[in-house]
Length: 223
Length: 223
Image (cartoon, rainbow over all chains, first blue to last red; front, side):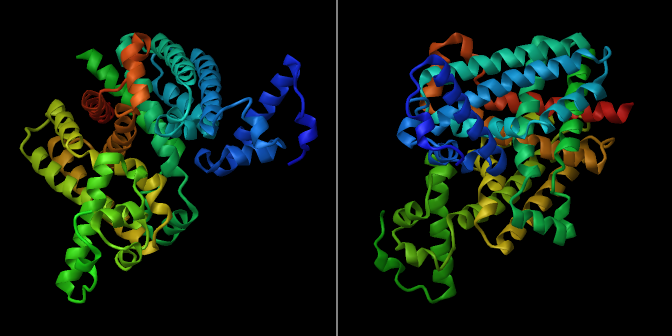
C-alpha cells in the first residue's frame, strides 16, 4: 500500500478518473500474476492501490468486472501481437504457427489464467454490458487470428480457423492450470517418478497440440 | 434430508461404515450434478445425507477429499465403459472414435465438471495419499484408453495416445463449462445473434476436435 487514501479522495476531472482506473487495473493485474486470479478479492485490490473499498466501487462494481475488463484488453493485445508474429511466417509453416502460438501464450500467464476464469467465474457477477463488451472483444480477436492463420494455411475454411482457435485457447486454459500445480502436487511429481509423467510442461504441450490440430484440419481439407 | 441423525449414530460394523460412506458419496454426486461441483459445501452434503458435519468428518476430512474420491471412481468407470465401446469399432475408424469419446463424455456431465475442478481445486485441500490415489487412477485410465485407441490406429505411438487423451480431457473440461453457461449468458446468446456463435454445443465441438486431433496425429506418423 504505497499511497494513502488522500491521493484518491477527489477525482472530479476526467484525467484524474482515468488515472485512478488505470491504477486499479494495474494493481489487479499485478496481484493476479503473483497469486492467481481466483485468489484476489476486491478488498485486496483496494488495499494494494490505497483506496477505500467504497471509493473503488465507484469505478468497478465487482472484482469480476475488473478482471473481465482486463480480459477484454488482454484478448485484444494478444491478437494484435500474435497476428503480427504470424505475419512474419512463410506459407504452410505449421511448426512455425505452433511455436508462435505457444510462445505468445507462455509470455501471457495472466491471459491463460483468464481463459480459465472468464467462463467459470468472471461472466457470473457482472453487468450484461460488461459481458457483451468482453464477448465482442474475444470474437474480434478470434477473427483477427483466424484470418492470420488462414493467410498461411489457405485451404482452411473460416469454421476450421474458429475450431483451431477454440481448441488452442481451451487447451491453453486447462494446460496452464495443469502446468502450474499447487506446491504439494509439484513436490509429488519430483518425489514419485510414477507420477511425473502427468506433469505438464506448458510450452511443449501447447506447441505439440497446436501442431496436431493444424495438421488434422489440413488433413480434413485434403480428403 | 430424508433420514435423521439417529440412523447414523453408530456405525461400528464394517458393513454399516461402508453403507454410510456410500450414502455420503451418493449425496455428493447428486448435489454436484444438480448445482455443479464448485457450489457444493461439506455442510450441504452432511445436510442432504442427514448427518452432523462432525460425524461426516470421520469419513472424509474435506469436501475436496469427497470429490477427489468420486473423480477417482469416475475415471475408472469411464475408461472401462469407453474402452469397451472402442473395442466394437473397425480398424482406422476415426469418426467412430470421435463419436465414441463425445457420446461417452456427454453421458458423464459430473466427470466433465470434475475434469475442470480436479487440478483447479480438488487437489489442493486433501491428503497426499488422496492425491496419489487419484493420480494413479487417472494414469491407469489413460493407459487403458490409449491402448484401446492404438488397437484401432496402430501407427500411433504411446506418446501420441497420451497426447490425444490429454487433449480430449482438457478440451472436455473447458468446453463443458462453455457449453453450460450461467442463465444470463445463455439468455444473451438467444437475444443477440452476433454473440450466438460463441455458444458451444458440447457434443459436436468435442466430436470435431477429437477427430481433428486423431487425424493430426495420424498425419504426423504418415510423414
